[in-house]
Each structure stands twice: as C-alpha cells, then as structure tokens.
Image 1 (cartoon, rainbow, N blue to C red):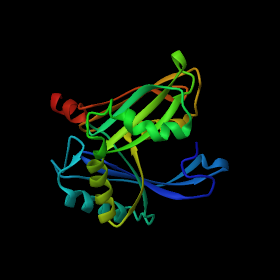
Image 2 (cartoon, one colour):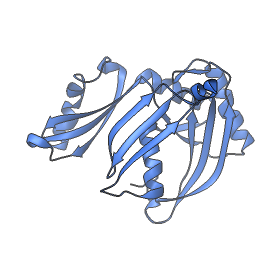
Image 3 (tube, rainbow, N blue to C red):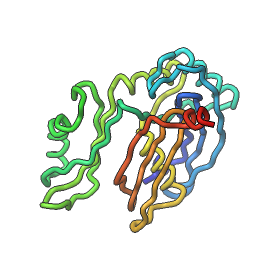
Image 4 (cartoon, rainbow, N blue to C red):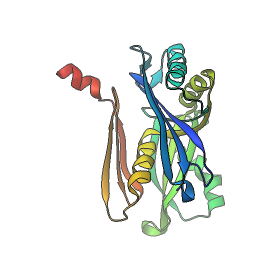
Length: 228
C-alpha cells in the first residue's frame, strides 16, 4: 500500500526516543507512490529523563530538540509522521463473528471493551480485518488502542515545534511498513523485525504482510551499555 498516495509528496518521519529525536525526510515518487527518495536525515540528543518509559516528561526539551533538528538539517517540510509504543499501546488479535464492514464499525467499541485494560473513552481505537474466513465461521481482527493522552503529548510537542502531525502510527507497524516498502511482501515467508532503542525494544514477527506476534519490551541499548 502506498504511504502517500499516487501524487508526489514530501513528509518527515520523526522518532521521539528516550535518548534522542531522529528525523528522516522522504519524498514519494514512482508509480503508485511506492518508491521513495531520502532527502535528509538527522539526530538531536535529548537530556536524560526527558522521555521515561515512552512518556514525555520534559516537553520543552523535546520541542527544542525537534526545532534544532529541523534547523540543523535545513528541513523545510512541515508535515510530520510519528509513532508511539510502550504500555499505553495495546495490540490484540481478536476473533469475532462474521459481519459486514458497517456492522463491525458499529460494534468495535463494545467488542474492544472486553480486551482493553483502559476506559474505552480514554483510548483512540483502530482496527483491521486480517482474516475474513477464520476458524468456526469467525473473522480475525487486529485491534489497536492507544491512550489519548499519549497521542496528545506527542502531537502537542510536534505542533508546538511549529510542525503539522499528519500521521500517528504504532512503532511495530511503522517498522513493518518500512520493511515491506523496501523488500516487498512474500506470502510464504516469516520475518522477525527487531528495533533496539535506548530503553525499549520493538519486536514484530510477520507472515505474508500480517503481524502474527508483536511486543514492546522495556529492554534496550542502555542496559547493554551498562553491562559492558
């Protein structure tokens, strides 16, 4: 699937990590928008404790880092895509009775309440049918819930830095999108994707374009550095 549609467009991917803010500026091109040109890349360190367990503790430091990152690398594009992870993010594969798209849209909030350990009013929900012909006449649905205050913290920092947040993804799926854009989808191949950050490790095991296992683990490069 094209990330930007068929027209050429430039966007900046911003990764707000526990040790640094990273950015890549890419322009889509080619038929279907599935080819990309890397225009810019940069990294701006964050002070210790600015981000703790994926939560922004010092928004001023994050805002300043984003602004410095764009200025230092002469990034003019204002549209930003970012992603989140950690214990405020819930990803579940659930099995539901066969139903139409409209019926699923109407019932997904009620169904989600059975699987989400937060008040349903406090989360942003998204979902995708990954197998319309599951066992027992059911269908498999990938359910994603993120606490609204987590999304608000990230988008607010980006907005206050003078940018426009167009996309908020989940780290494990952003990693999957990156892999599939570069290497395509092999229906019979199982691939393990691993992103080791300073404090969090993202794991996503995919088969045929579908995530069959994913986790965010609170272990990262900092622990390895301390051990050495």
